[in-house]
Length: 319
Image (cartoon, rainbow, N blue to C red; front, top):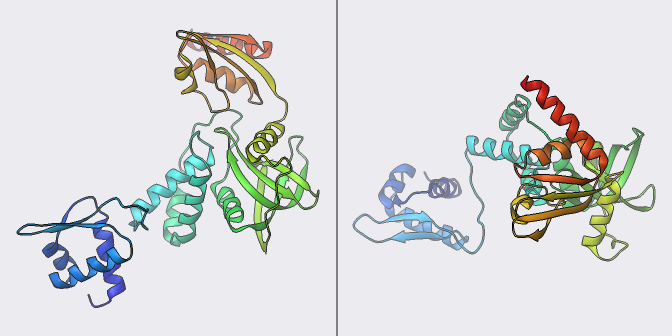
């Protein structure tokens, strides 16, 4: 193989397999001499790839962890698997999958060949996910479009459906994508209304980057974290005060609930959840039941009613 860039890419692809490669085997694979392999290894090191060499009668090379993340080469199956996983997580705002995952998905889908993009879409369309809450899901293509506009500081047009069903067209300067562990939100400056707004991403459709760049404005409150919390609270609509006690340690309950529902320890092996929530009562009733720990709802009464209805439905299903 006389094409040095192509040979380096092939060599890097081999080294990213988790094993040690004897120099002679690499030379055979790439149809070059062991001396050429040694020179190519030095080139990769100069590019920042930490290639470790072992001494011995045969000797070998392997790629090890360095101080920075080097670019990865993925084969078709690996690229499809990663894209499907990121799409599934991003589309349903699974807790722990945040903006970084969406940025990774945007980068990957930007360079996926058409044949692989089609395979990813086909696989996802043939899969039926079990969702929670009000069933609101987000098209990964919408998320990646928003993430690209946020990263590129590019003005964005989209259609938006409000909570009352009203449809509007928006032109915004997208500032940040935020996941609450249940829903995605876009914090943006709305140019038509000349004010900051928070949009539920599952209500966004037809996002179109305009190509016009902008300089980010300062958030009105100054405290970014506080503004994001307040803006998402307003976007969630009508909320209720939750008051639930659990006969289980706080860390156990917290590990099974979304981040915005955090109980506080009240004793050895007990805790209490007091929080405002815009989650649906049906979802809260099912989620609390699935915690598999004893609990008692102090308020609201509507949640107690939903739990009674859930109990009745389960009892009927078992008779």
